[in-house]
Picture 1 (tube, rainbow, N blue to C red):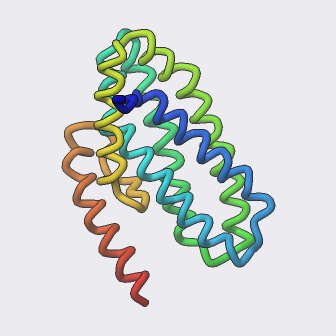
Picture 2 (picture 1 turned 120 degrees about the vertical axis):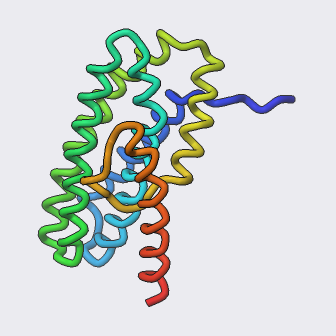
Length: 182
């Protein structure tokens, strides 16, 4: 029996659902756990954004009307990345962090709905299943190699993001390892 191949839209939808569940837990989160929660959420969001910017949006741009959709999605992600970078600076101030997490939740949920209403139908309506599966495989590889911290001043589109992304990921992993060792 062969294993079912998963397309990029299903992978993205799964990511969205997982983040929505995490964000729904925010209000009940105890203050001592908030910084850990933020770090986990930040890493997941950054990896997702970078993988979309390197794999998904270039594919969207090749489709009818895709440039406009990709540009608007990247703009939303850039705003969220700026917010994440600012939040890293206040993650030890629980009150500020909680307020900023509320702002982040609104931005992330709005962005997810935007992708679900424009990007997903465009991909599913324009590409054959085997292309969606290939994009899904590339997306999973990009997730694994993506940075773990926001880099709001790094390029968001090829070729710049294809060069800066791996370097940022290397720096992030070294930073995370040093922090874990302390």
